Image (cartoon, rainbow, N blue to C red; front, side, top):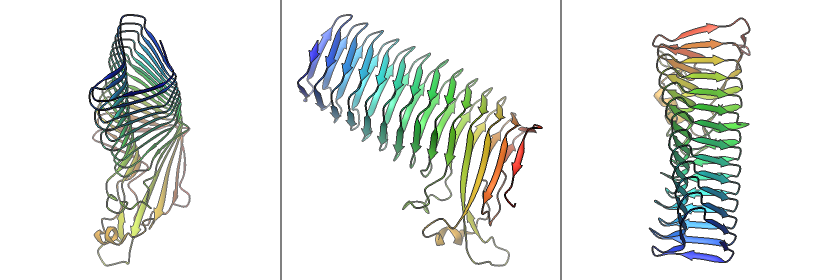
Length: 383
């Protein structure tokens, strides 16, 4: 079936409704769907294919494309905008579902851009994704053996999540650029025995209380071959308010996980200083971390570069922060807690200003073990 006109659906209606196996819909026109229970294209049956080439706008609880069945494929190459709680751009409910994203996807107001629910599902993104607002999720995938691949640019902010993945024995590959803003998470992965490859040319965590990648579960493998930067935006209006709330590049929670860094991990930390007073610290420092690993039996191999950069008085107005005089923070590039092992073999660089001092580039605690290899190097840039 070919749809090359304007598809406008509201009031709980369905634009195209097909029941049966092996159905194909080529949507070459525009699609506008609004209101709860409204669906632009619905197919009930296995081996369905939907090609969305035009511009789609989904709002107020509507759904653009919904496929209920196994072996489904949705190819989205046009511009898609999804806004509002309970709104969904593309949804597959069934096993071995595939969603290919080649166009742009903008998700706001608590909406979901893509939902792929079922075992052995796949989402491939080559386009740009922007996710904004509380509860908004760019891509949600839930089922055993999921595969997620991203080579596009992703921007997440204001309490949103870029990718929400719940799976066991899945595979996640991130090779595009990603920027994570205030109170948001770039990728949230929950499950066991998953393989995660972070080859992003740039993963930038710039928001307050933000997390780049969050991995929760056991026996996961995380390989970091790209560049990760944690540098909270000190020019933001809320920078002073959330100065003491940490942002993190990568969190790994659980047991028997294996984390390898072959890329570069950089953390920038600000110290706000004021006039010296007897028996008091000269100011306050923020807390940020590049990689945090918590749990027992984890292994962390640091083969790439670690860099800790200090800044001084980067806030537009740090008077309230300095008045608290909390002293140096526990900012570290790597933090490992629990009966786990850290093997340091790469280059470590410390630069910039640390007028209040710092806790250390690598911090191990709660029975964690640090082993420094013969090939490890350190450059303290005058410290």
